[in-house]
Image 1 (tube, rainbow over the protein chains, first blue to last red):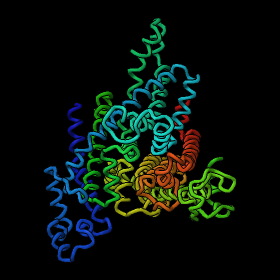
Image 2 (cartoon, each protein chain N blue to C red; image 1 turned 60 degrees about the vertical axis):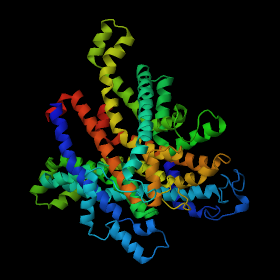
Image 3 (cartoon, one colour; image 1 turned 120 degrees about the vertical axis):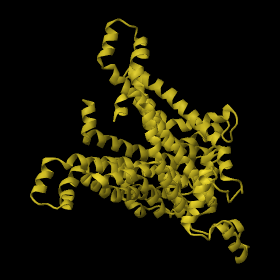
Image 4 (cartoon, chains in turn red, orange; image 1 turned 90 degrees about the horizontal axis):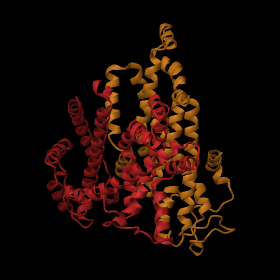
Amino acid sequence: MVLQYTTKRIIYLIPTLFILSFVVFTLVRLIPGDPVLAIAGPDATPEVLEEMRIALGLDRPILIQYGVYLKGLLKGDLGTSLRTHQPVRSEIWRRLPSTVELAAAGMMISLLIGISLGVTAALRPGNWVDASTRLVSLLGVSSPTFWTGLLFVLAFGYYWRLFPIAGSGTIRHLVLPATTVSLTSLAFITRLTRASLMEVFSQDYIRTARAKGLPPARIVIHHALQNALIAPLTVAGLEFGRLVTGVIVIETIFAWPGIGKLLIDAIQFRDWPVIQGLILTFALIFAFVNLSVDVIYAVLDPRIRLE
Amino acid sequence: MIITVLGLVALFGPLLPLPDPYAQNIMKALKLPSTDHWLGTDQLGRDLLSRIVAGSRFSLLIGFGAVLVGMAIGLPFGMLAGFYGRGLDRIFSWVIDILLAFPGIILALAIVAVTGPGIGNLIFAVGLRTIPVFARVSRAETLSLRQRDFVEAARALGCRPYEIMYWHILPNIVGPLMIVASLQTATAILIGATLSFLGVGVSPEVPEWGSMLNAGRPYMMRHPHLVLVPGCTLMIAMMALNIVGDYLRDRLDPRAIAARG
């Protein structure tokens, strides 16, 4: 059943991705400014420009260009960067691991701390932990990632020099960017864990467990958490969109060599093959994450599968 | 309260007795707050308070502008799809799915990459990602109202479809739309500021809060007030909008009221 559902979803995804690639392709062609002029530089003669245009296939109708592009795409060829003259695919591959590392670390931190904070707050609603998590989550939702990132740079890079504020490679480099990335999701996951655990606590089977005289810790861990964690875990997948925003911003602030930084650089240099390749990559990752979330949902909740 | 102040400042900012936000004075550059310049001056000697005040207009303009774009396009499509259903609805849902296949910021970045920096382009780019949000809400609400008795009655009395939608359905979905609008305004301001911070939103000399943060970044180690002032302003504004959004949701959304018991 789950397999069937997954296959159906993947088949449904294919036309969407095709349309997506076409939209991105035409969109990128609308960028003002002559790409040939950008490659050749201002000193090139009109003849050279014309030759390059033919060499790049830019003189042909747009549908043919799209066909050529699509053919390359199916073979995994994303074109060549105008700035570095490297294949776009290897540019992306080289930087993707850094981004995944940052995103995964950020997600781990927000899940671990978010769930613990949420549980603590739900156990004693109204006490200082609960009150301060509410304040912290409001702050977390309201402060833009780039602002917290800058504050961290300021605090740790200048006042207390505990962690490096730029570059990557070691665990110490990872601390500040990953914490910053985690903050927005952290706030949300804390709130959600608290709400869903409180709801579970009010249900009959928990009262039964209490009446049986089970120790409170056992009730929380074995009975309540199992049901209460479904919501925050699935939302963690949906939080991915926000995480992407965070990652792009954070990579720029902390000079983290990932694909978010690559995208911003490419936009500023009008390096359209890279822009195009990256937007497709992001869309693909996003679609894949959404798909996995839905599949996890289907595994956890049989009602969805039957639809 | 904060929002009222913010709105008033944005509206009447130019009337306040403040220095010109664009006037440069290198002799007075990077000064800390003083009686002359309440929040200090930036790297080009421009008064930070006047730039913050001027920035409030840009940030609110981006926020409300983007939400208006989203509502103007999303609402009619959502209502039509919800009202007529079937084929139209299917095509519509598919388009929405494609729009939602991009993380919001990527979509906005793609648009800005095409159109280049500028406030109009920024509003459009940020607005585009609010379209599916408004379309979904108005579709769902219309769908649930379509079969209600008063709509049936209007139809029996010979109202034309657009009359039903305008006079009978629209007034009933204003509440949920307002909740979405207030929360989306906060998100839109945030995304606008993020794009400007990344240097692809408004052009650098425009006193938008995000671009002020970006401009202050190289100087912040020695002169932290350059980033602290616009950053705190942005945070307070976001917090106010989020609180209002939550408040509206608690008050107006029947589901939230039911959930609270």
